[in-house]
Length: 247
Image (cartoon, rainbow, N blue to C red):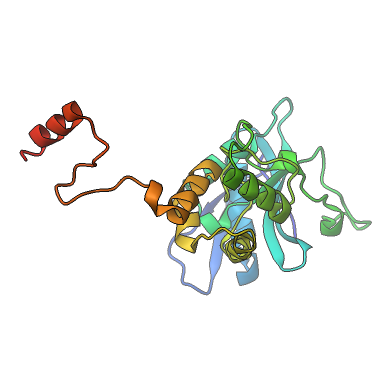
């Protein structure tokens, strides 16, 4: 598989295509050429094309890695422009507005050059495994309670990371739908419970821990009486709510 070189060509997806065929139009030396891409190569090639449109990216290769049996993840390998340092979080943010969630790479690995085989083609097997610096981690803040600590430890194990903070986001770190099932089962073994919906609606570690604690301890949640005004509200708060809703 040849990688995209952003300096030598530009590419534009052709919209009038059917489900079984995907073509890209390459602009090279002023001439347009329609190139057929086999179905199995659609997703990586589309991701590579989008990556090459990101500022500072010169070449890109996207492959599906399975470093752990049963855990296949998309990994992007990048050669940046001179003087540019790609930021995984920023790249993921830019791609998120153009690609489906399942097409977002779990990691972005920066290289000086791609490894080549003896015949000059990309040596996919020689591409390095991603490390902790290749994922979209946020500013680190340590877990603050037992539930956050358990979740952080599980994410570190399942996502093969050295450190996970309470502001990190499950999917940004490389989590995916198939891994959610394993995560939920591991939580259960720790005496905690969560649903698939909860993981999707509260993917940030601190939010997820709070949601799990609320479900585990419903008595701690704010009670909503028939008049819709929580009993914990002070008198001024109650009066304000009544005025706004004409109660």
